[in-house]
Amino acid sequence: MSKTLVAYFSASGTTAQVAKELAKAAGAELYEIRPQVPYTKADLNWMDKKSRSSIEMNDKSSRPALADKDANIEAYDTILLGFPIWWYVAPTIINSFLESYNFSGKKIVLFATSGGSGFGRTVAGLKPSVAADAEIVEGRLLNGRQTEKDLKAWAESVL
Image (cartoon, rainbow, N blue to C red):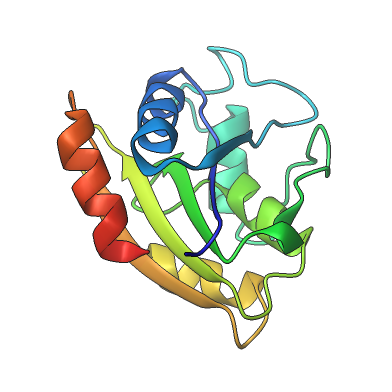
């Protein structure tokens, strides 16, 4: 059986709740991806073109600094990687996370929360941030309340 990590970034707490439920259902360990400078409500105002999140998402080379780099990635075979969808893709802090570790030979399954959009070009946007032999696959949106049974079944189907 493979060893699994649920790694997640959550700006408002929604993705964090889902990640915790998923880790429990999958029997996986949990790791929070945290920015060095936490996001404020003003930073997340997508209607303000000068907000931090808008500036980061408009610059594909943006790599927000991480609060730490102590995820023990080498200990895992599969990483269930979660985040909110911003502008139809993963927030650039996910690229920061992926570029901070060696994911060679790992399977990375994405899950996300979203207010209305799907994954868009998320996989294509993240693939350059990992080793060529790392597998990144689009998982699913986990919006709303998920039952432990449903989360367990989904996790088993992708592991």
